[in-house]
Length: 71
Image (tube, rainbow, N blue to C red; front, side, top):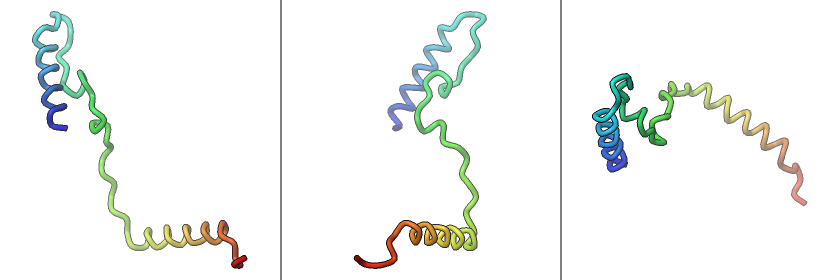
């Protein structure tokens, strides 16, 4: 991944060095976006109550999908 970032930096430097007088300067992320650039901000950790509620909901869904008798 580091090689891609280096390449992106070089491409951005070349693009900005030879840009027209009215062309805006562009950051490396704008010139060549990488898949990891669009990662959103980290979410807050869930509380133990949230996790228990999630497990309870999953148990209800499993009970609705799975047969009650072994057949």
